[in-house]
Image (cartoon, rainbow, N blue to C red; front, side, top):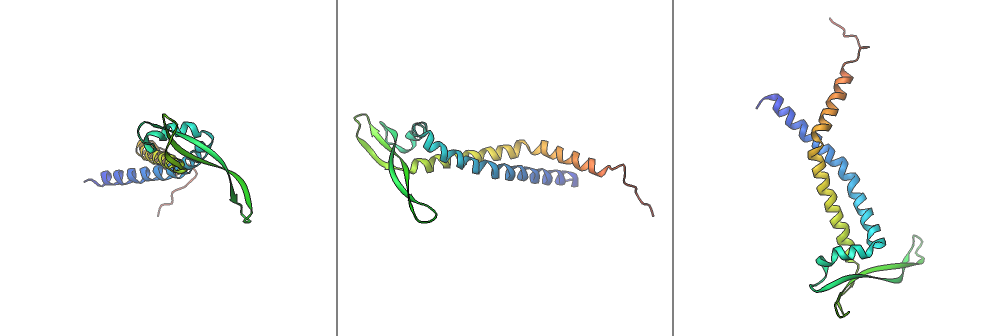
Length: 151
């Protein structure tokens, strides 16, 4: 292989890795935040999405809430609201016990989506970012104020 081809491939891989790293450090925490907020505020919508994954056939998921307590930073009990998903059949019988795991699966699905999106961004944006970096480097190397000293 030519030296320029090897250099181009290696710099393209580095730029792709750089874009992936920057995007995953932004998107993954964002997915966790959106997942945790949406699993409580939009619980019924999340339950509809998670029903085929977590509930047996012929049942639907529903979110139940209940009063509970948590410990604060000073070990004082503080009132809180608990959220769990249970699966109910057509007769109204609970076929899967209430469980908060729907939120963990939901956050995991969003995190996996952010990983896939970061991979796609790393591959798609590698060329434009590489061109942008090359232009910046070319501008910085062509300073009219610099005087070349010859021996």
